[in-house]
Image (tube, rainbow, N blue to C red):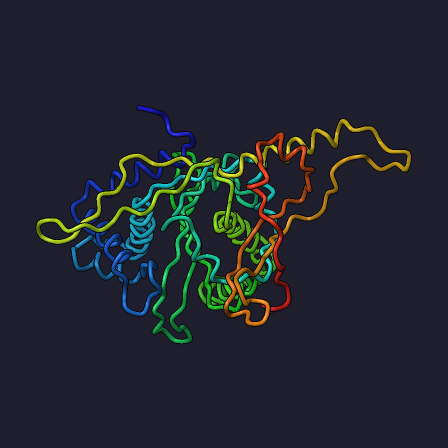
Length: 361
């Protein structure tokens, strides 16, 4: 048996195998697949509401035990039930992951998140999340909250099932980003404000007094996980020439419908050419002699950013007819020779089209 290229992948496969061994939990996994393909009233296409999973868990008699354990199990079944449809594992280059993680999200449209390459991709981080190094990987998936509670209306959520390294291996935990906002920057801001407000109602006053620290730390975690997610939502995210697998279809069998997911995960080397280009640029910068002016003859360095474009005929006059495309622009603006040395071709770098700035504000 081959060893997985990352311990988080092994942890995810082990957890999925254990869930599949329990008859009730196995039925829940199949229900997640059915809801993904057939939909749920009110929810966007391909988005499985977690509330529906909790209801089905109660229906098939999954033991509730403690409410917190029931909730955590539901989140695990939701994420792994979606991931098992394609089993894509996106192994990030460590230097590329570091650069992308610190790229500010900005005012990007929520709809970009509908371009995830599969239902719940597994992001693998060789050096962990910079803001929380013990998080060495995470699944990310859209969820639909039907609302109905005081002050809560139906809205989308982005859920991160993070795998945290501990003394006894890896354990999962859930981070939630509410998407009831105009753009992703506002979504992070509103989620932080809501989390702190709820914490104030549930915990000691000292927690409220620590609000600036909590906002900074949790905000950094959410922002970095979101930025790494956006990298997968690009038009061409550099996956080493490996194409994501389509989700396993729902097929009719005796007694109903069922999915037959792939047996093995698919490893997608993510951003390794960009990582190589970044390293080559840094090496060149370090060995180039200084110019007479005191400046190095080296690639220009500026802050990494997300670049958004409109494409589509007629989009200049009618933005509603346009399709937004996303592209990550690294902090190190490497030259064409470095890109070619890193394995890029002209086809990998699409021509620049009209940039969108103020039209989304």
